[in-house]
Amino acid sequence: MLLVGLALVPAGWTLARLGMTGHMAGHMALVAVAAPLIAFGITGTRADPAGRWPRLVTPMAMMLLELVTVWGWHLPAMRNLSHQLAPAMIIEQASFLVAGVLLWSAVVHASNRAAGIGALLLTTMHMTLLGVLIGLAPRLLYHAMPGAPFGLDPLADQQMGGAVMLAIGAGSYLAGGLALLAGLLRREPEKVQ
Image (cartoon, rainbow, N blue to C red; front, side, top):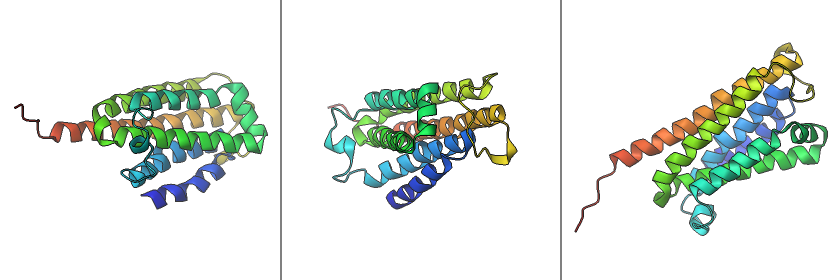
């Protein structure tokens, strides 16, 4: 899982330069696909952040970190900065990956399953809201980004990017939260002595 997750990182960075749709596809490749695979791959090892720093890397704290990271980089000024300067784009994509790995690491940690469900469902909500805001905006929120796929005009590219975020991002976190909930419900109740 770790190797597959790491293999997706260059793809996420490459996609980020292909219009707003590509940006969102790259973002989702990092936070919704690569990050959980990396987190599952390092769970229980010395590289597991939730295992090393359990008081710091908690599901709700990491959900808030990802919320601030994702929403912060999607403010028009920050999105335009990332589009115009390659170092800013690298920092943006790296921060998406780090925030994603920290969140997924926190939620899969054995002692955090119940809180992890809440964190993933809240992440689903904020990703859905941001995807809807970007996808349904009646005007450009960001400067037109070159490289839009399928010959999309800038507004259609932005709207498609919002739809990508909505479908992949919200779906990944919702599926993760439901999987954790199913596992929690299957656990044997602890016997009271």
